[in-house]
Amino acid sequence: MIDLIFIVLGIMFIAGIGILALSCIIGLFAGAIVILLAVIRSLLELYQRGLFAQHSIRTFRQFLQANPDIKQIVENFMVFLMLSIGIGCYVILELSWGYSLLWAFVVPAILSAIFMPQEKD
Image (cartoon, rainbow, N blue to C red; front, top):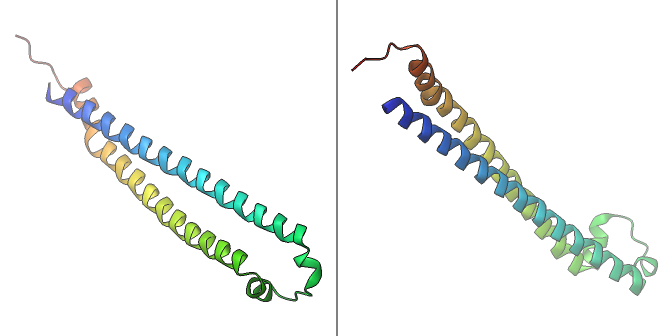
């Protein structure tokens, strides 16, 4: 009976980590799509206003200094990128910890349930 409890707890734990990882990945992709759409929309507005043609921009830094709106969007994107890398590393560590827990509890419980002699009443 204790072996069955360990099996169920291990499966629930691994399923919870999988749901956490999936929700983080979906959130990261949704956030990246929203930020990319904002950058594209801002660049299209600048192109329609003719700001690209007015300035002879030599470097990307000069372009950001000439357009503070784009500078703010790029800074937000960099912050988002750092957060997504941090969350991704956390999810990878969490998953590896979950799989080590799988090998520590669930697999021995399954093996002991299969190979240990059962007591007969």
